[in-house]
Length: 179
Image: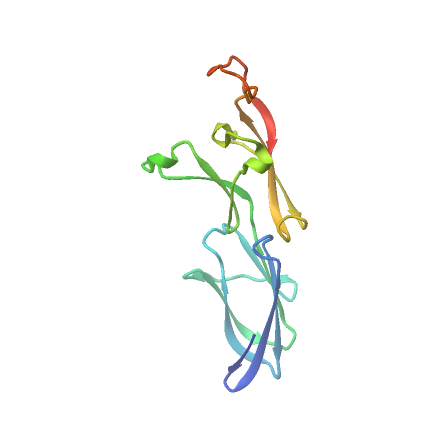
């Protein structure tokens, strides 16, 4: 991206694999040193962000309306690195949303994940995640052109045999890996 500040060209180049990871880098190209404020968006879902300029962690006085503002005299080749912490979080609807009672979603950064039958079998409504569920996060470059996949352990009712006429079972819930 190229723009002009006080009639002088400033080029900003971004490198990132967002939203699959929380790392981003910005490189400045300037004809001459220039003082200006660079406003970096800190997403609302992000609870912890680290900003480095030239490899050194930079103190941000405050965030205004979702932006960290860095005012300084910038040099040609200055590099800004952003690191957004992206833990997997279990999201729940407000209790008054009755249609979602007992249901959860998994969120990592800006992406909301779902369970699908192709990976987890039928009767997805029977899957239960423990409150302290842990998830493995990995990037699968063969899936949909490359996406992040979550894997964790949950429980579900035992799947009845295909030809079972029984509506009830005495079999216990079992732990099973889900994707």
